[in-house]
Amino acid sequence: MNEDSLLPNSMENMKKDLDFLKRRMPEPENDKDNLRESVESLSRSMGTMMKIFKEASADMKMDTHDAVLVSQRLDKILDRLDKIETQNEKIAKGIVAIADMIEELQRSSAQPARPSYQQPMMPIQPQMPQRDQNVMSPGNMMSQGIEAKPLPTYNLPREEERKKAFSFKI
Image (tube, rainbow, N blue to C red):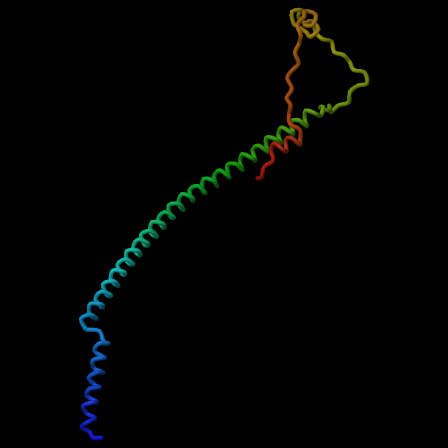
């Protein structure tokens, strides 16, 4: 084989390969358009993301502001509740003190007073001065049809009822 005969064949093969590669490679103008469209799409996406982040940031600022307001209101409410609790403790102590005083009065009225001296075996009746006839005595009232009413009594709570009525934590 001679060199001259190989050259045209190889040239022809090269031309075919070059045509094949040209067809296979995109045109530079088409690539520029595709690249431009991709960059524009990316720019739009980035703009949308920036808007979303700005809105999220604004929402977080509002949430933080709202949380601060709620926290301040709750602090005021807690302060008021502390004051009420202190007042309730004072009231409870006062009620317990009053209940103790009533109980002490009940005990002292239930026990008869004991005289500190000894009574004589036979009591001596003192002479009573003559009373005026107009003074109404219980016997006089009965004879005239006037009925004497008894004094009112107070029903004070028993120990168990008092404990139930005043059962609370101090």
